[in-house]
Image (cartoon, rainbow, N blue to C red; front, side):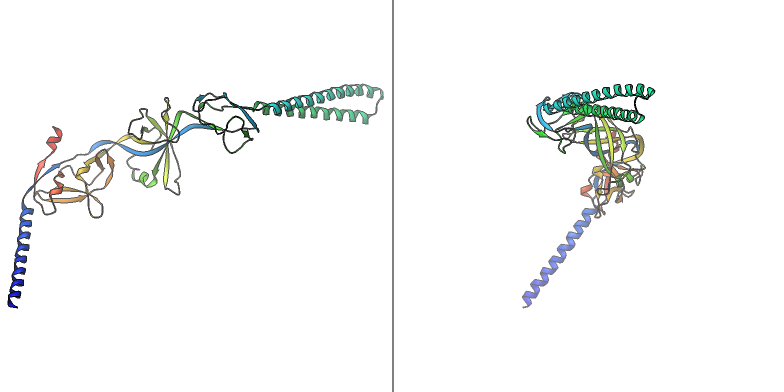
Length: 374
């Protein structure tokens, strides 16, 4: 029994001594100076940029629908081709509408003949009334018949004009110039006046809009840094990060906030001579401020996060120890963070060796400012 107690006692003594030795070694290691690289940064003038996702929209879109009912007789365009304003796109069977025009012309001629007869009768009546050869009542009746005949002629003229308009509508023409899409109907299809489904659509993409959305909170955060003024330069990139090559201008911004998404829409306008920007596609847009701001640009490798996810930098003190400072970053610019204040030009910000140190470390500062200049 004594042997077992002695064994346990020796075990605990050995464990205690080992723990003390490890703590002593750890303490010794913390006191060993560790070389770290630092930089000093100064405020510099910066053109602020903001990247947003944008959606391309054609400046003009025409949805082609028939204004009369009938059978599609011909399709006179090639899908995906460029059409000019006034080009005939479809022809609707016009036989019925030609017959309506002929009928309207016949009714008009009949009304005109009747009017001509009544005008002659009215002229004779006016002569006879001078010699009391006709009663005044008869003269009034003839004049009334003449007025009715005049009204009927005007009605028939309007009917003929309406019939001609419908006949002309048998040729469905392009209301704007642009690229026409895929046809939703084929030859022989029955179409109806003002139907909901369009036959095809034409998009004028010589000039396009790019609609950008930005959260209202972000607009408030950038209020003192960036004015979303008209004519602000906007550049575009495609999904493969290739530049579009033509700069656009910010044209307008929505004055209200979308209730569901809490965003504001900004609209830029771009020239599109080569038709590279297609309606409906998504692009990456960069807004470029016209005004410079003075700010610090802190390398992202120097910024870590604390337990509350606050961005922090590690500084070297005069005693060659380390302290951390919380930053208020505005946004990323390339591989750096934009910081307006909270940093002094004399601060030695550690950018190399952060993974080797802790709050008790003693460091050997290595000035990287001269290397950056070289």
